[in-house]
Amino acid sequence: MTTRRQARLNETLKRELSELLARKVRDPRVGPVVVTDVRVTADLWLARVFVRPLGSGRRVEEVLEGLAAAAPFLRHELGKALRIRRVPELRFHYDDTLDEALKIERLLKEVLPPEGEAPPGASEGGPEGDGGGGEGP
Image (cartoon, rainbow, N blue to C red; front, side):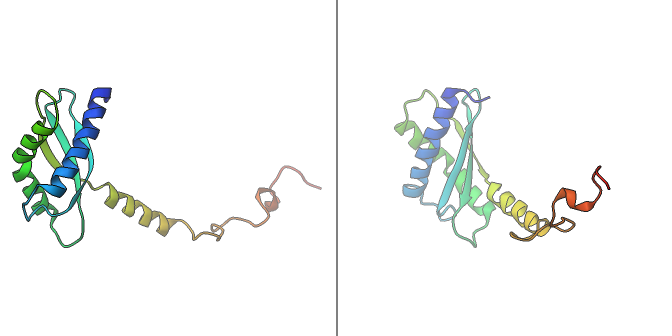
């Protein structure tokens, strides 16, 4: 369960890290990334930062290595910008939720019929059109 303080810190870290990554990180391995989510642990000592690289052609592992190398610099900059007792340790993770959503959508398109087309086995007359109802002559 996320407390109100954790939720506030998650949003603040997400906003600040997005700005720092866009403006101050010069590591060529990082490039443009989107911070999709930040989750701070209950004791506020660790922040899992979920990122997604923009563009294609860059290896995710390379981006995560660059972010891990920039983590001490980012913590220092966060310490200057935020008024908190201790800045959480930053751990960067690749956010694969978009990949998973696209995979599910592709599977659903394979299984479900196209829009406007009735599913196989469905009768045009509705459920009583079978003649299998309880009423008879």
